Length: 115
Length: 113
Image (cartoon, rainbow over all chains, first blue to last red; front, side):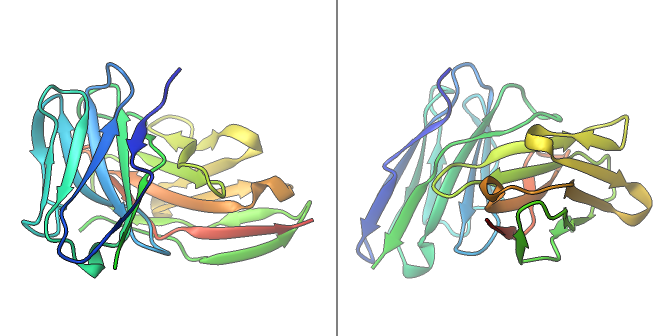
């Protein structure tokens, strides 16, 4: 079946531009996570949705980062006024249930380069 | 604070050699542990997971890991690696409060044919 998809796969932005990254989770998955992976590092948590509710946004690095999942399926991560330190791979993951010991299924990521 | 530490950042092995990648975690609650793998050009995939029960868990492609509670460790092993195992390996612990994964910084495994 279809896995988690993300678009675009690659994005180059000039410093100061706004970007929007899209995630399509596996159909029916309740939980959706965003992670940021800097070069040579493991993924770091950004934010978590259970259906349309954003239950945890403690990992968002600044108020320039905003995420939404208005209908409980597709999610968008928006970064305003991009900075060079925002360059990273942004990973989306979904899980079939709410909070609990469940596997997370990852998408291919969006590689953002800010010039 | 919860954290995961992977001691080996870059490992180079010849085919048929045995593999052990170290992972230690710092977490006081119920522990759920994972190993994920990222092959070149591909997305993160689950290798294996530990939720409860038998501390020796077996995953895909001949990998296994042992949860040793007294050592706060969850090391990944494979008795005989293949060239196709060349990839980046990530250990992670699940935060039961929020369901988020806390990852180690990863180990790059290079297997020489």
